[in-house]
Length: 189
Ligand code: GAR
Image 1 (cartoon, rainbow, N blue to C red):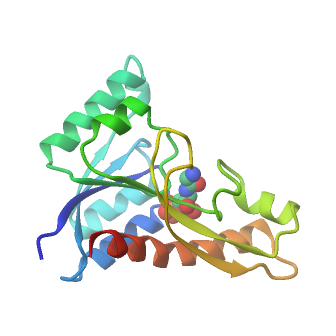
Image 2: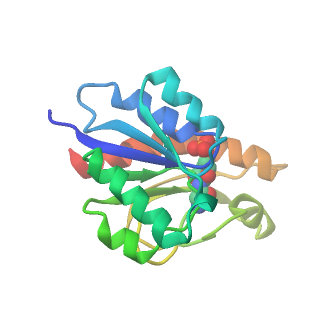
Image 3: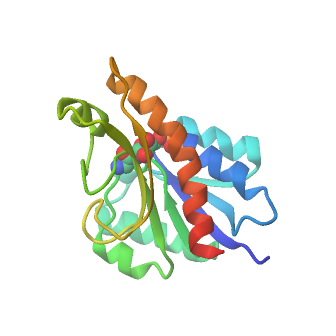
């Protein structure tokens, strides 16, 4: 199988990145992780670059004149590395429509709620505040509007009594680690 070259964009811990890297080790998984991009030069998830011997590109937004230059730099890097697919995994910047239309391949994102519920931040607390009975995660294509692109796959769980935002975050995160690889298989297999 010819695997698609993928860049994973992170800003922090990188647990979804780790799960994708491990999955991509299987011969029959349709992508290989070629590059880790982080807009936070101190992101913990950058350690996976060393652990798994994958190129990383920590890029500091504040060292560019503006968002356009920052994104142009990113696009050049992606082109140089022949990246065909972007997976956003806890990447906390909003990419401009110019970036999204300029990149030639699909851009995917994982979001910690059952979209269209709870776009943006603080998803777990908002689900609890609304007395929701279920929560979950969504893998979707990135479109120009935040957290609104076509949904590829969702996974849900029952919210427990006495659930806190933290316990819910941890339980949903475990679902995310299954959902992202499954969504990628679904698209490319
Ligand atoms: C994940 O829960 C992901 O869904 C969320 O950030 C976390 C990153 O964790 N993404 C967003 O909130 C994007 N809007 P990780 O760094 O351990 O993968």
